Image (tube, rainbow, N blue to C red; front, side):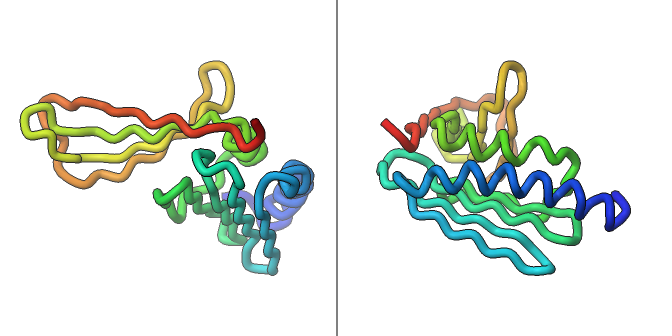
Length: 149
């Protein structure tokens, strides 16, 4: 963990960058930003139905939560501030995939992974396991659209 003053300074600079990005989205998405002393939160609901809505929550406890479409990943440690502006821009650009993982033998859904391509060789991934990993999985990928077409 960072000292509180260092964390707040870096967070403030990051939030300025994120708020600039989401302000421009207001033409093609519903945007809500809430800031308190305990957390900063943005909810973005795109007009394009096949674009990925998201919610980003960054707390003073140096954790963040990210909701992509219906998948939520909570209380993750804030390790790299540069992640957040890249996430916002990549989601807006449609670089989001939902990967549904199925047991190859039974076709039972065993996991859902969300992947955001942030740049060459740099992805953010979150996975929700529903069942124990089978010996062999089949992946089915849903690609989300960009907010602006």
